[in-house]
Image (cartoon, rainbow, N blue to C red; front, side, top):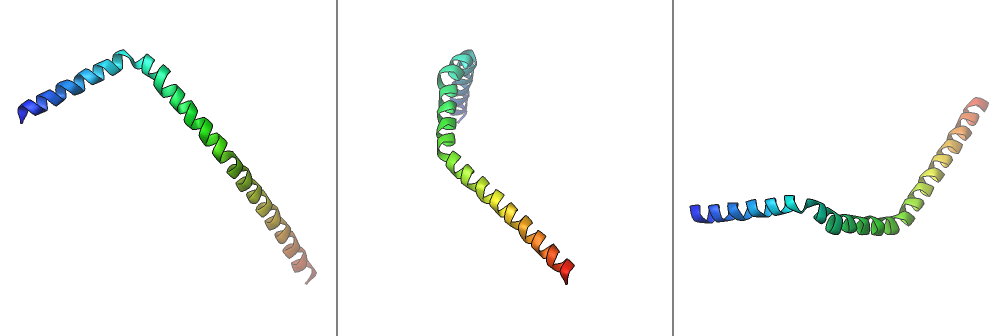
Amino acid sequence: MALVGNLTQNIIDKCVSEFHKNEDKIKQKLVEPFISLILGYVHQQLCPFLYIICTIFILTFIMTVIILIVLMNRKAVI
């Protein structure tokens, strides 16, 4: 059991040291293009939904203000 533990620990240590050596290359060639691809896709897919949600929120807010104004004017008349 100790042999397997030492072997896996050595493998993990070697992987970590390799990642630290090539951290800039990994960021530049793997992480940054992947993140930009994901953000571009999310922006392209979610933008219409965000516009619709904002429009619905603004219209609901305007409707609420109009209803409150009408109710306040009715209370003043009665």
